[in-house]
Image 1 (cartoon, rainbow, N blue to C red):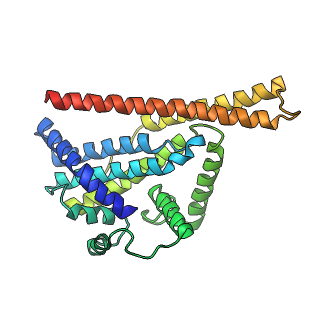
Image 2: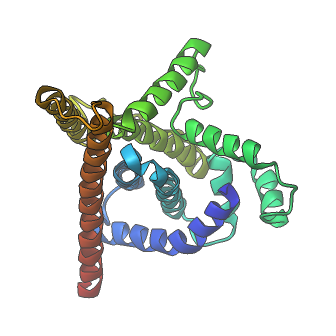
Length: 293
């Protein structure tokens, strides 16, 4: 999957990254390169958080789509940073660089060898091992493994991270949108980490220190509010069933299960439909702006 995504990103996101960087430079001709880098990173962080965090409730099957969306957005950010450094974001060389920056391969030479072999060139690792590799890669992106942290976290902290993720999965199956704050924070931190590596790689220097944010991030605050409302709706539905003593076959459990699943599905579907509507409106706005330009 990493090699396929990297090839796809350069092929389809490379031209988009070139156009975006050209627009940034045309719209901000006097802006220092460091500020343009910061604008690119902020946009990628915002999009990866908003598009990658919806994986909860009965929509857990969307995990691969959300994960790939976040990876592709981070890939476009790295291609934009390469363009800001004077490199061609559509060049095949960028593919191997993406794999190195994502931590898939230790260096460009190893990444190029893997790309030359192509998908399917190596024996299959088996379903169980392949599935575990995907889970580990997602956990690494979310910062649970702590491989990118300096100094590395203790075993206790890593263990607590895995336990927290497991509990979030279980709770998220019945409480819609409870994943949002957890995933929003995780994707935000992951995008910052990969941006730091990309800046150091392309500009041969560390990324400028980011000023400490005062107060809560608006995106995380919004996700927390949605999760809180979702929790209140779920608790209210359970209390209503208990007070009304609604039963099916002389048992409360079937009614509770139907109410929780139905409520989670409805709320998740409404939120997902709104997200798609916002994306479609944004795409129309961008096409209109491009035509006007």
